[in-house]
Image 1 (cartoon, rainbow, N blue to C red):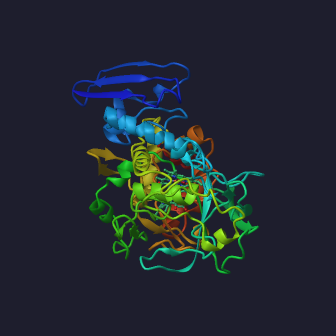
Image 2: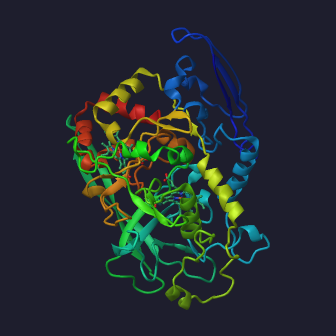
Image 3: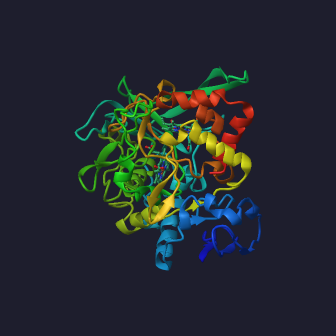
Amino acid sequence: MKKYDFIKNKSLNKSALLVVLSLFSYGCASEKTSNTGFMISNHQNNFDRFDIHNLDNSLLAGNLTIFDTTKDAFGHFSPSLTLSQQDTFHHGESFFDQSWLVAPNSNMERDGLGPHFNGQSCATCHINDGRGRPPRDGEQMESMLLRISIPGAGDHNQPLPSHIYGDQLQTFAIPNIKPEAQVSISYEDIKGQYTDGEKYNLKKPIYKIFNFNYGEPEKDLLVSPRVANQMSGMGLLEDIAESDILANADPNDRNRDGISGRPNYVWDVEKQKIAMGRFGWKANQPSIRQQVAGAFSGDIGITSTIFPEESYSDIELSKFTQKTNLSGGEPEINNANLSDVVVYSRNLAIPARRDANNPQVMRGERLFNQLSCNTCHTTTFKSQGQVIHPYTDLLLHDMGRDLEDNRPDFLANGKEWRTAPLWTIGLFQTVSGHTNYLHDGRADNITEAILWHGGEANRSRDEFKKLPKFQRDELIKFLNSL
Ligand code: HEC
Ligand code: HEC
């Protein structure tokens, strides 16, 4: 007998909704009887979109999958957490969600914002634990940022920071301090056509940085625009065995399928050694812990024991009109609170697929494999004792000139990006309120994301363009079921 118990576990102060779904499947594989009982209040959670007779297709993270199709779908803790771990998770969540305050503040645990920053809280960028997006007309850059550097690389192959502006451009600042600069985006239309004659339009972003407030930067400043990733399933990605990731690497394309794929190797600041990169758009961070501490430092201006230095340069400090009250303590987030945010980030659960057994979706899934999408978007790994389906190999691939950012990041060159995990991508609209895909959010929907694929993915993209419309729709329907 197999038994699944799913409890909707978002903290109740965020949503008054409580759903308890218990589902029992009995008997042999060929004949299953099911018995469901769930209670829903407030709003609808489309449980008819899960086929309980054939649930396995929906379980992207095995028994650690949760069931929610609402805007809270990314905010649940993994069912593997014990009660005391759940407390830690919620404590970490409060530091993820709440805005940091300008120092000095009577709430000393939460002050020290900036002086320069990109967001006041983690949640401003990771919208509902989901994806950030580029600004729309008249908006500032609120859930994405620009990584910057100058040509060359440091001792550990790390990008070299600008001597004034560091390695990330901060477009906000606390009162009395000027932000580093401002950014605007314009778009250039790129027209194309499917084999069946249908036309499409892609828009290529062009970034302009202006009003540098602390002097002219280096002439050859390199810029990499990146939106905030979705947060779900990160612990599962962290726990995939390194040897399983390396098994898919084929740096010299020995099997001659046109697709290579190689790991990034980056610097682990705490361990003081080179480590495989897994997180960030170029697999530029080795662990969730370092990524989280890096975000506190670079994105919010909060120091920690891992990154104890404030992120402004001496040149900037010399130009600040206010030189006191810039710090909220040393470090600004203490170790215990930092660890709790790591527990939160590591344990956000993966929601089940919707409509996984719909015939169109299943035909789309076959097309996904036929077009070799699965060569990079690896469907299956093992992690935390489960069979998981993240649809990424966590490796770097050359994605061609159109997606190039020209900025190396450890071993990743300008054209290389980490294969984006596709689990959860069909819920972005519901959770984060938009459908902007790719590292800089340039694709307005999933179709455009595929059409931007180049380099090693040229053949997959060309095969996609040759499909008749009904098959393109099937593929997209499959991707939206993830
Ligand atoms: C200004 C927007 C912004 C803020 C604020 C922000 N992030 Fe992020 N986050 C990003 C971007 C952009 C990336 C991708 C970074 C890269 O590729 O280098 C990212 C990536 C991540 C990742 C890795 C995701 C993945 O799939 O590899 C984690 C984990 C993360 N952020 C956690 C946090 C935490 C915790 C905070 C608060 C301390 C935070 N972020 C604050 C924009 C933001
Ligand atoms: C050569 C490896 C490779 C192949 C083949 C490939 N992809 Fe990708 N895919 C990537 C990488 C790398 C990214 C991230 C690119 C970026 O953000 O600039 C990506 C991004 C995506 C995204 C956007 C995800 C997000 O979270 O924003 C979608 C959707 C996608 N791929 C679907 C497909 C489909 C469908 C196919 C087959 C037609 C395919 N890919 C083939 C490597 C590949």
